[in-house]
Image 1 (cartoon, helix red, strand yellow):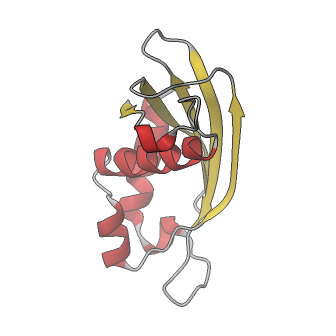
Image 2 (cartoon, one colour):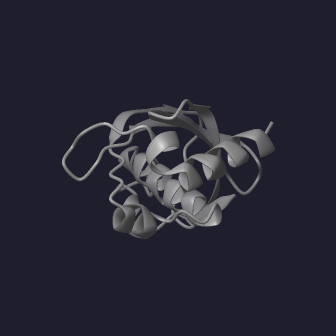
Image 3 (cartoon, one colour):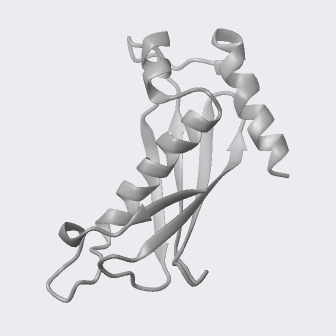
Length: 136
């Protein structure tokens, strides 16, 4: 579980969080998630793995405001070696859902060619499969 504290600059004149920040928080939580499975973005980049976002979606449930704590749970929804789909559940400090979303990612070489993670980086593939199986 990743936790984000809503910053003043992330809010509008009414101190309500601007909707675009929830997408940024998904990225923060994704970076944290990869660190927890021992494949931080720095390691991916050092290995030559590029993982662009190919789709992102957010459904807003309840507003957050300055100084709120937002808990973000990240889970793998789908992974078949080429594409990774992550789901995010965001709740406030009272446990109420504030946003649900997902992001999809593919894996490319530095030259921009798609790669099968299972064949090219079996350690990363195994880490993702282990995380997927442990959340079931």
